[in-house]
Amino acid sequence: MRKPCCEKQDTNKGAWSKQEDQKLTDYIRKHGEGCWRTLPQAAGLLRCGKSCRLRWINYLRPDLKRGNFAEDEEDLIIKLHALLGNRWSLIAGRLPGRTDNEVKNYWNSHLRRKLINMGIDPNNHRLSNNRPRLDQPPNFTSSCATLSDHQLKCPPHHHPKSRGENDQVSDAGSCFEEDSSGMAADLNLDLKISIPFTSLANAEEEQKHNIACNSSTELDFSATTPSPALLLFR
DNA sequence: AAGAGCGCCAACCGCACTCAA
DNA sequence: CTTGAGTGCGGTTGGCGCTCT
Image (cartoon, rainbow, N blue to C red; front, side):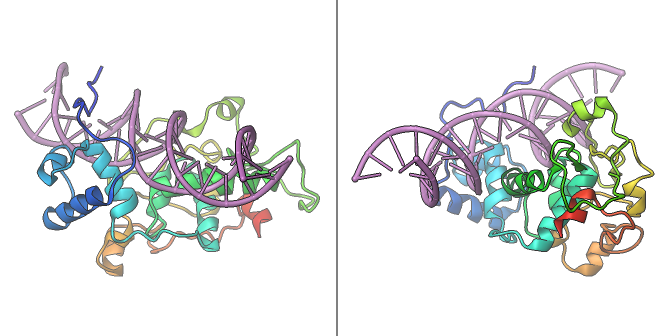
């Protein structure tokens, strides 16, 4: 078993003080990100490296947007969640200025409930059986109708993770995994993981990093079969 | 006014992955 | 090939503030 990353008994835990924030910000401005293990000592912080990294990524980074999510951001989260499952870092990568933690929290506190209220199961984006909607289209069939019992029982996060620059999202822990000829195909998506474009210098750089799907710089959600959630969301 | 309940969000924890030695 | 350090990710927790009773 791996030993814990923070063995030191004298490391601070809990909320960060303004002084700690300042020290961390100053240090990273001076030396850049990385080498989180040695950073705390070098920066004069009584924190573990992990804690520093999290604080920087989720709170101190200068390009963070913060504040309420816009409607189009909500839409995008729902779409991406339908496609990717609980892969928050991937989803956040498509939302400039947003962190995985922020997206995850927003999903759990707002969007999940929103979908549930609309009669949609937020786990698989299917229309929930026990709460049919009155305004449901008559011939509507969920694009996730091929979900097996096993998939229903196994949440997305049970799927093996895969990471890397050219990480193809072929193991998306969503309802589209089995129905690969379903919505994913309809969406014409060829998702690749890349550096979030907010961290890139400009749009050209973004293109270079192949964020796009099918040689476009934006995800193309002009699908012939929108997600069930989105059909009802508008 | 005060206590209970609830929601939000920052932070922690544990596991998985990568890569160098 | 193996091992372990470093890092990233997703799930969970805990504290704070707001609302309700």
